Image (tube, one colour):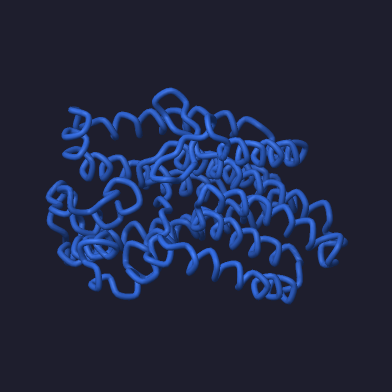
Length: 363
């Protein structure tokens, strides 16, 4: 088990280090142009890593079982923050989206905290209600109402991609916890009209779908980002153009250091580079599953499962969007994309998984 924990830590560190190298490579010219400092984003990412590392060490020294005592307060706090960010004067609006609190020169997304808080609450609920979890009113309905509230507030920001990711992780988690699959399927069917309205009745989302289906119909507009991403991936070939040699980062590909950093990895490091990133995420999944399977505490098992599913699902969605397999969602690539709150909460998630794995060593 010790070796498994070491492997999880090594994989995480490698992903973070790759992220910092690629953030500098993909953003240095843009940062020099906008902030007169080519290392602007790298310095900030290093600061986020430092904060995340301090929090991770703190989490490792805390008994994760104590989180059960705070599952409801953390959930309530997350809901309040999701409400507060929507109120003018509290939340910061960027591009029409109210997703951030401004803390000095840094931003904080409450949806990242809500995601982790909901996983903690769900794991606690399953472990406490294991005898009645399969019942509709005592097991399924309370979890659906809480998840629906969280997802609804996230959609209002608006951030449909994050809301869908949160819903999918929770659905998988409660199914693994004993909720009948028929309940989940009926819920999905009931939500289809709402999803249709949210996607096809909202102009910018409908435009994303149309751009996804045929980006060349508007190559200079809605299809521009997808096309530039495909050009980046295609021009990388098997071995890439070389580290720092990307052409698409030269003001062609928007969000090159955030949502579309995987495209730059493909262009500079080629097929073998992106395949290596995918392999690292797969190894992280298998190592985590191996680490938590020995945990005899149901709360720890479902908590670890929910955290790794959240990380892997967001990685899968990001990669699928970059490869034009899914419409643009705006989700960062965990550990690699530039971003403060997302990186910090992902690092905390790994620390919790290591904490759970340590608990499993006792059996």
